[in-house]
Structures are given as C-alpha cells and as structure tokens.
Image (cartoon, rainbow, N blue to C red; front, side, top):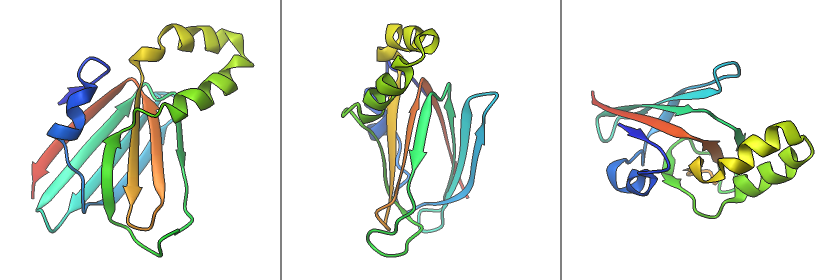
Length: 134
C-alpha cells in the first residue's frame, strides 16, 4: 500500500509496527530512499517499508529509557518539526529551497519510537508499506 500526502491520514489506521524490531535499515543516497525491514515474532508479521523521495531524516541512539530494540510506535507527525529544520537548512541554498517550499504540503513526516526512547524521524513524499504473515 502506498501512502502520500493525499492519504497520509490513514497511515496510522491501516498500519502497525508496534513490537517489531529492525532487521534492515538502508539509505540509498542516489535513489533518495530508505528501506526498512522489520519483524514482529509476537504478532507473526514481517514488514517491508520503503520511504521514497526522502528529503531529510535523523536518528538518535541515547537509550533514554534504557536499552531496547522494540518499536513502540510508527506514526505520522503533524508537528512539522522536520519541515521547519529543512526550511532553515535549505533557505541557505535557494536552488533547493524554492523546489522544497513550492511542494512543502506534499511531504510526510514519519516518526518511529523505540522502547529505549530513541527515535528515527523521516521526511519523505511517499511510503510504500507491505505487511507479510510469517
């Protein structure tokens, strides 16, 4: 299932990666994609998620709540924190900023939170979500 700005409101209702663990995280710089493979043994599911047209992403590894590998949640963010960061970064380079600012409403901010308190935050145009039963 592919999500973009037109149907991003249904991502949280139609997807769930709770209690899964990352088996692959791959960022392709040239293709501007992030491939994320997850497995949830407790739910008997495997998830393949591809973030396309990635403009910006960030992650942290601080173990705020102690060690942990399980995902608590994966959800859309309406706070526009990454969009604000991109506005600041790209404003210095008008060639990229003009393209971004003209299409700002087409981007999706997706946040993954781990049981350690760590996060991966991704700003992209499309998310391809596949769920497979093990």
